[in-house]
Image (cartoon, rainbow, N blue to C red; front, side):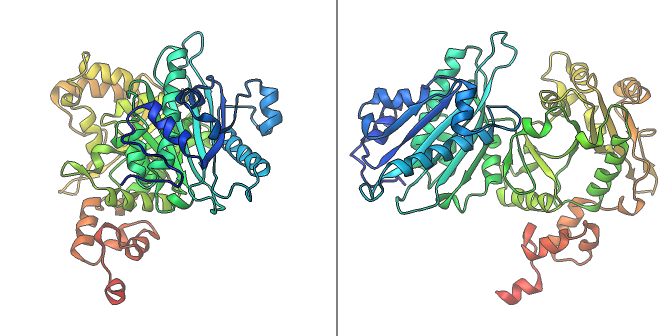
Length: 484
């Protein structure tokens, strides 16, 4: 549904950047400021060039000098300027100024906005491609006291500063237009950020929506859309449900990752997490206070019959968040890609905790046929890092245990496996809870769906209660039937 705002002029279609900027400019009620730091005034340039900008732009500025920036927006604790905190200060400060300087009684229909970005483009050595924060704080209803906000983080992929600047200007224009005219369809708004852009120009790896028009938007689902749409390979969200910047969470950290379906999270998952973490923090070069544990779900784990079941994803997310964990949703089917991703942010020691079946899969050549160097290339990327695998045992049908000593890999892989095991890259979790070895997520899920009793004891404390209270994974309880 096409949104029409008070003060709109007639437009047949809005395909071009110029038309997007012009539609904003020709609405006499949309009025605000542009504050752009670090990559020129690329967004506001589109609005100046489109025509009719005098009715839209209250002010356009760049505070390139750090002392000027501090004088205007305040001093950051860590003296960094390309941060989410800096961006939020910028949009809030500029909105405050508009409200102070524009008489609301004389302008009852004005919808105020503040657009801002703080960006670092590619450096001269071309070692760092650059990144930035972009956001808008704005009104849809002039009477609404609370403002709406969209804040995103981007990474540049181009190798030329001028091209990066142009890309930023296009993205900013798309964001402002989407904020006003697509706020009722946030998924489309997300996709339209790439209008007139290609995915090899820019990556959006974090986005958060807030405010009255986005009160029903779950930022975890929005984060899933980023991966699903190919806008980024991985997104991360914190226990509070908001998307967080992976670079900020992982920077220079010791990282322990657990991959799973967590459908639902069981006592086995938590035992594996607790025991592998105990072993990990006892390692040399691992600082307990500088360690980040990540629960990772791959997109392939979210697919049901070819489509991603978003409700199912939300059920898993709620449970992991309730246990206080940080979750990564990734497009990395192979473990070496996950390790490569972590290595962008940290050179410190890393660990992967996994079950026997996962490790056997790692040694399956079929996953590496697309690589020119095959499995050796993948293992070079996986194990040359300062990485260790913590292996959780598996109880077989005859009651025996499979560990790193007796697991079976393909005969061609046997010597390769021995090499990594004897070099200490694969170690067994020995202090496991034997009572959890018979717990499987798929069994618990089947019991929940079939209404069988007994599954509650297989889950961590509080998780079964949450499943029943919120009817997760199709769970129906007597209480729910009575309410209905």
